[in-house]
Amino acid sequence: MMNIQLQQFLDDIGIEGNHIKISKAIWAFYDEFLKERKPVKVESDFNNIFIENEYIKEIVNVLKRKKAIILRGVPGVGKTFVINDIISNSFDNIGENGMQMIQFHQSYAYEEFVEGLRPQMNGGYDIEKGIFYEICDTAKDNPDLNYFLIIDEINRGNMSKIFGELLMLIENDKRDDYSVTLPYSKEEFIVPGNLYIIGTMNTADRSLSLVDYAMRRRFSFMTLEPAFDTEKFNAYLKNNMGLKSGEISLINRTMVEVNNLIVDRLGKDFQIGHSYFIADKETITNFTTWFHEIVKYEIMPMIEEYFFDDSSTVEEIATLFGEAYA
View 1 (cartoon, rainbow, N blue to C red):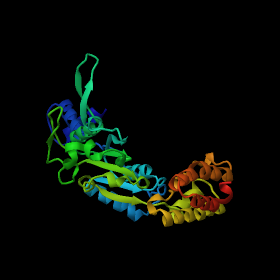
View 2 (cartoon, rainbow, N blue to C red):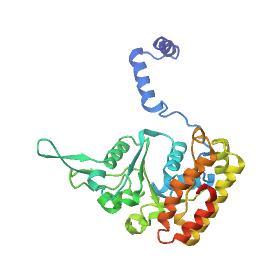
View 3 (cartoon, helix red, strand yellow):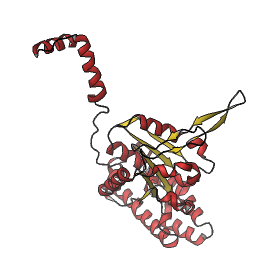
């Protein structure tokens, strides 16, 4: 029916020729250049992440300009959740499988990240590509789409060794135009401009000092703070989790006092984040029991580790929690 309608339309406007070939050519043009690549996203008000909207805009603007950022924050501020939500609601044309996530650790190596030799069953060795090579290759082949590599705990690996000679190429002004020769395959390799690199970093482990300055200047650093007693956090506890005003007040009052004491004794990089108190409504059958279990089995063990040689501070914080820790 569409071919018949197209034929009638072409006849009406005076175009002659093989209508079937013309219709195929029009469809190919539409499919290549005009078809919408991704459904239009609904604008998000970011109520599920507890950051001021202006700071969210700053994170997005810096990421688009720098193309490589690191989200810093204390344990429990939801760094990974935040960046996933921000990307999904702030970028159009995200490629298929366009958000990849890995985690660095002390044994992670260049050979896993970029390329390396792997032993084969026949006794020989083959060059196998890593996740960074693969996502760069995909992004290079799809320049109209956006791709994101999220590296959890980025500072726990030896970043200079893992990135190797690609250190220069991740700079925003080196994308697409500069290349290096990979050591195993001898291929010319570039980092495309439509790939964004996002690392997350836990400030409590102090390992930023292990990252050399050449690596640091390739990234912009954005900091996420605990959101206790903020408008978005309180609204989420009430509307999404069904907590009562007195219960919300207890969480905020206690955790603000605990964090103030931690800042006074250790510094702001050791505060406790708000995500410990984010849960599905159905899992909270009894608020007192739920709050007690979080305090006793999640927060206090961390406090005891922070102050392993200061039992008086541990007891002081336990007193702030009152019956929740009893």
